[in-house]
Amino acid sequence: MKWYSGRYDRAFKEVMLKENNQDILKLLIEKILEIKIKDMRILNNERLKSNVHVKGQRLDLILSTDIGKINVEVNSHNEKYVHYRNMAYLCDIYAHDTLVGEDYPEKVKYIQINLTYQLGKEFEKIRKYQMKDNENHFYIENFEIYDVNMDYYMGLWYNKKERESNENAVLVMLGLEREELTKFSRKNGMVLRYMDELNRVNEEPEFREYMSYEEDQRKITNSLVKESMRKGIEQGMEKGIEKGKQEEKRNMIKSMIENGMSKEDIMKYCDISEEEFFELEL
Image (cartoon, rainbow, N blue to C red; front, side, top):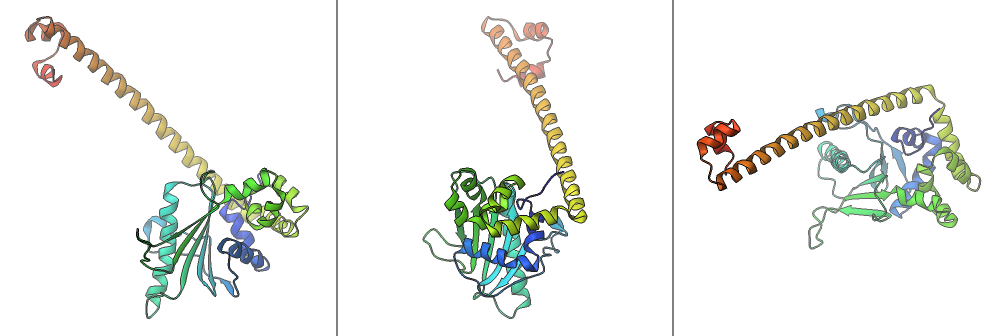
């Protein structure tokens, strides 16, 4: 039976949204932002209802803290569209507060944390984005996006860097599979607690039903994409063959002209019309 790690956004949320685990969530955010948070509460995570392209979309986590609003997203891959989608989430939160308030929320920070996998070795541990111009002047100062390279933190464990793994345990543990997480938990109480919560979540029928549906949809999408790619390749090959034949015919006719054959004789010999002859652009 498949076991779902915190790399899956639903599993991550099922653990972190539980009231008893919010201290782990707080520790995670403090580790990434390198600050201390005094107050934190989880807000309603249903957003973007006005956008027909993401109808019913739910953000992973939205938090109200003493340092501002924080949106946490889990990205299991690093496709280009993820950036646009996540930016839409953050802007939606900002726009919502602007519409319901009496002025622009310039004193409140709006922070997005992206726990992203497949960023690659060249990407730094954590990259921070802000809205600045080429001379480092802020357009607005209260937008911050943190892209966390989850592969880097998982690599600490897989490369057997024990001290660094323990120092960053709250990040390392999120992407580990069950066997590795079990080994890690033997020397770290927080990891053990997190693993126990994940095990509990994985045993819930409602969670498994949801994940099974998600997996089915992903497989269907992948199958459709592969079939579309296969047809595209076949069509491309057919076009290539046809293009090759035309080029071969063009070269042959060009050689006939160079050897003094008349247009009429070439048309008769190659069985082409006058219009086709001129289309060759010899």
